[in-house]
Image 1 (cartoon, rainbow, N blue to C red):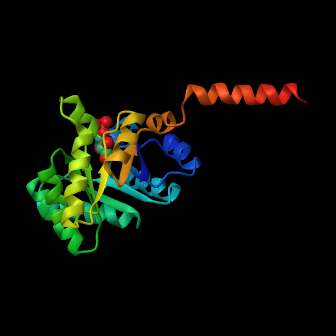
Image 2 (cartoon, rainbow, N blue to C red):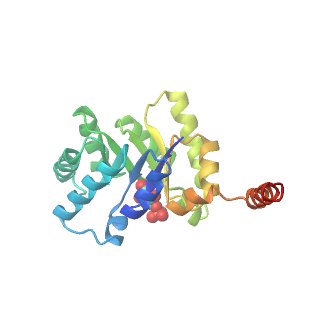
Length: 217
Ligand code: E4P
């Protein structure tokens, strides 16, 4: 399973990248706004910096909702760097636009996916990635990880090539469960990635090893 970081924070992207296990980055308009990145010029510059920092796909989301505008915006985003994947919402014009992008050699990440039916449409449109929002599904009393399993089963049966990108990850346990459920990629907050490191027995064991080594010197 690939690890993407879900942030527009350059500091967090660098920290995760320094671990050596980062495969890419996802952003969304909320995450960009959180970093104070506003206006086309600043947004373009920010995406370019991310792409020059991480050797992997970076999802850049369109803000348009009509076919012609999505195409125009997506073309501009894709031109920023070869690693840009255009993130398109699961709406009618979005599906049409993803098919156009696929036919014209531009890779897409279908975002705001909450059902298996939507995931089938994304795959039919040729999306490189489909992003089911696990945490938001859990927040509404449904099982987000269960959706990953369902999509994984359907994609295997049908031979769809679209990669399942588990998004809206809230915890380290989500990452483990998504790996188990067959996600191809997990996009995570830095905290959830670092949380995978933690186990009290590791800390206790290491303290003992170091203490024993020191005592036997
Ligand atoms: C990633 O592509 C999504 O935009 C993101 O994971 C959404 O996460 P949230 O539900 O925590 O906002």
